[in-house]
Length: 378
Image (cartoon, rainbow, N blue to C red):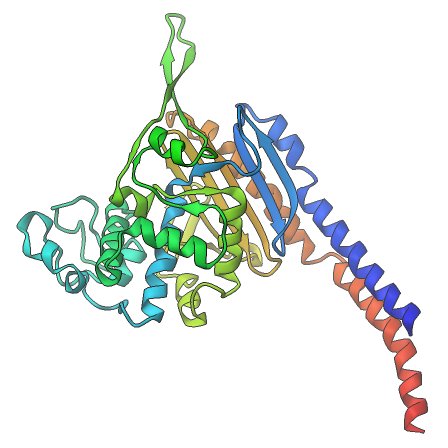
């Protein structure tokens, strides 16, 4: 029996090593052969354990932190749903119910028909401050940074704390050790947080011969309270991957709220095709592979986070260079190639004999235990 148990454990460990190695196998080649350089960190995990990490760039280290751009929306959505769990917010309640001051001012008027749920799912129609919804609230998807800025104000109202304090509180309570928010100019924030990597923004110009030329400028943007809620949070790769794992494992919000967050509330056109959108989370379910994701772009920083709940595989990419958007394939091509490689491996994994390796160990145990059990029964 002891021998059978050892065989089972060895089979399981061998299967896991094989799977982990195969998922990350092509990534070094994809990164090194990419048409543009990479400065930042790429981390791939399975069951919250790193299986591939790539670090490149001046002063970039494993504990370096980056502005995570629109990945911040996932954190804001989680904070709102946490407030829902605590009975402080109702998803179908009018936003103006929680923001009476803004609602009473003409330039900040928010129609009563706009709900918290619609802000979370980008279906409110509110895109610019002081402007009426572009369409009937709830009828279609329109990505809105303004909507998430309003969610930040809503959180400040119900908790009576600045949104950046709520982010830092989440970091401490969940022991993420590296997800935080500060207001001010990035270079000033770095004096308080030396691990923060300063970003640079690329601009492409044409030479006289018609060839493009890269020009880089320091992206010393000012992070205010509104930006924190939709794009100004800061994190290390490890901290954000820990956030993902805690969120999708059900350790941050209730099962009911997590189901809402990861259930389709709308559809959006994306460079990956038509995706579903929940609350602060993109959802892809093609080819029987469920994927939760979000990406981000801010002057000086580009980011991507994906999570595959069945295999518990997560990917986080944080860069400190924002590439000129005139060539989107150049900007996002590396991220998309890495994602595509991981997805192909995970889809193939569905039909691979990994589970049979596990079962071989189980059968070995049973072959020993069943005769023993029969003897005991006699």
